[in-house]
Image (cartoon, rainbow, N blue to C red; front, side, top):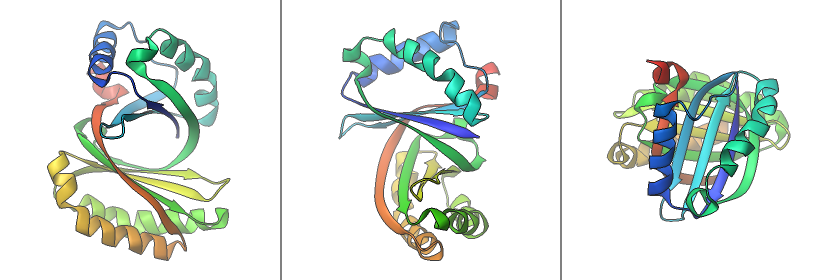
Length: 204
């Protein structure tokens, strides 16, 4: 599985959320071949938004790129904001109930490209079970960029309150994961989840 992460700044979050919900419910927003789930993460204080589209393969992701661009062009820039970056990542962990997510914490770990596999192994075997056992956690997603040795760990929560309550344990587990993978913690950010939808959930 791979994911396309598009970051936007500015725009009108309320209008965008309403527009996207309307288009999805009406069927106007068509899903690209191979799409498995979508996450929209919103940092209201920084006026930044991340659109994560999960697809079956890198090939499916690349084939869908022009469709994403066309969909974006149908939304006025004052509503969708200005796109500042697009990145592709390999999805190395995907666990839990994405549809139940209401808040997300992204922890970025950096190291050598050779440290990726060790970091993934320690996350799957040690960190993931502990994260999933925390009250209010509904899932976890791990993204890897093997070219630059960067991993992004996304933990999903049933509410912002649950996410905040987990902060101390999250700090401990993040440092433990970084130490085991010979990585350093580059950034930690908190987001509201304005859309969390699996294709199966949408069809249901």
